[in-house]
Image (cartoon, rainbow, N blue to C red; front, top):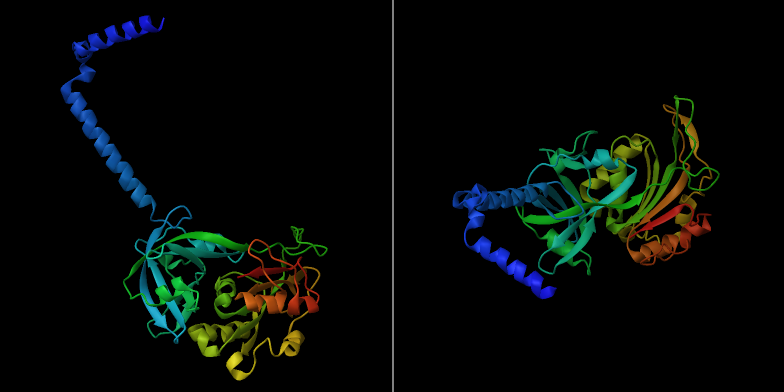
Length: 347
């Protein structure tokens, strides 16, 4: 059976080889040449389509951005403005709003590693002052980064030295944290919507940050359209570390949106050394959401705590954070009644 099948196959092949196949106009030399050119053209179109599709920022591939401003704050701190080579049509600030904290991954091509950094919705004016982007504006995809050259931060050290005009590759956005709905009956579940349109359901946030860990909280505070209030306890070497970011704290306090406490180690206010003072500032968690009139000022009643910073700082404030888990809530927050239900650690 196998030999017969092979013999029939051989005869059929010989008939094709004798030229009968080319009696069909479809197999003419001209059409074959045209088909080959069409294949090449189609391949070229697919290549350029794929190349152009990589313009929009995505988790699946790297997009090219350019360093348009490099602002050195001091020997350790830098702010970078990054601009996509082609404007972004997707407004990530509108997409994420203030419900999600997000970052981008930047590739260091020399050592082939990536690190996550938190974009800030800022723009620098001609007079040198910084302002937050207005609601609905994405500045074509431009954003700023706040960097510190940590000893083990090889990517941050590399970024801080890049000249204006240098092209880098990044991808994202990556969701670092999505804020839960306000706890109903002291558990994080979707709250019942209010039937009164004149009232809004909100909950306030306690944020404890150190170093560049302030960037995610700044992203939250600077994103337009968020009614939540934030009590911020920030630790740093000196307020000069913050550069132009510091001016926003006064503005936000003036609007009633922020309550700000600064712990400067150079001024003898290292939070690790004055824990009793810090404990007096940390409120106990508010157990329930608050339905408030939309235009009525109200005091801060944090129901959720966010801790961002280097690992030693996180351990002091809220207990050790492990690589793959949050770990138990300990430290200062535990002493004030906070627990795993209402604390998130972000390193």
